[in-house]
Figure 1 (cartoon, rainbow, N blue to C red):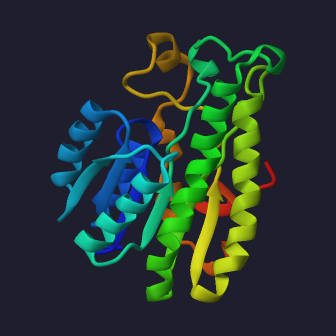
Figure 2 (tube, rainbow, N blue to C red):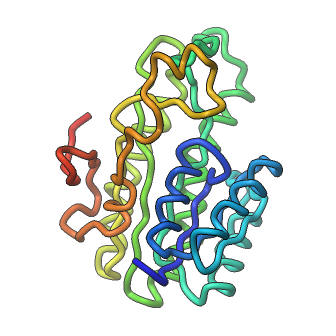
Length: 241
């Protein structure tokens, strides 16, 4: 993977940061995009010590002009885009003890819209604007995120993740002739980070439990394109949930 170029949205912290670090350690040049300026700069500095080129951009994935500019700047700087990881999202961290989201009957429409447009709309916009760069080279990997959160209060989140799974399946067929592999990756459960509440860090597995599933997904064979995959015994396997 050394010398390839990747765009990671939601890359400033959490799972996105973990993925960006993993790619950088493999010698991949990385641009991370996020809305949180301080962690964005902190993670950029970390990545700069791991790979030959890394930069960051403040991007709201619900804004098409910002997403289009992200891809253009990445392609201009790296000369190519080989990998897109769509990790930006609004997540209900119920496993951390975070208060549950409202039930649908009590949910404000602006909150619903924000979750849908970030978790699903962001995947659409990033895919739309990265695809032309990958088509020119007749190669590429798009890695989307699945997730659980099946408790009461997680309806909006789960709707987006099931939709992303369906989006992955259909887009995979649209770009198959261009040798672009599109996969949806299940993290296999909740994880905690260094900034998670102490109780969550005690009871929820750490991010290292994700292993190298995202690195493998960014190299997946075309036979896995359109599939929901997870890590089983050190290899990617197709999963139904």
